[in-house]
Image (cartoon, rainbow, N blue to C red; front, side, top):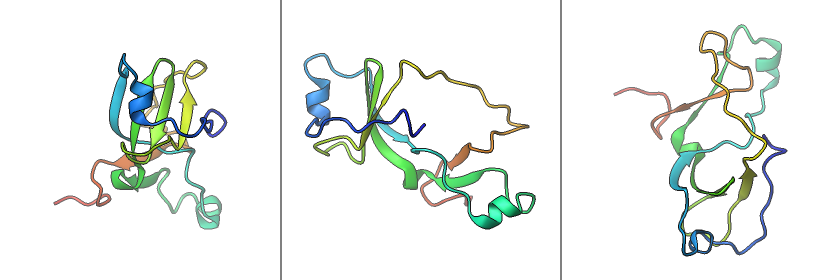
Length: 118
């Protein structure tokens, strides 16, 4: 959630965060900071639009590093400081019912070109 994302102190690079012990996980991942804002038409006429917003992986691809109970989100691995950090201690994973999706959820297309098949 937006409330959980906090701006970390500047100047903490990926290599500095790894330190001598490394990271619990690091790599590219699709990350959204909150759900995309719905337009007036999507709010007024929800039956016309899909229940979920769709974004391409390329739009939300970030470099993430998980260390301990915190996710550090960088635009690129070479950045000198993360965009923000997400503390994990108060969060829990919830399995979404695909037949009744949460209106705040977003579908991320697995390709960077959007929802097109070849």
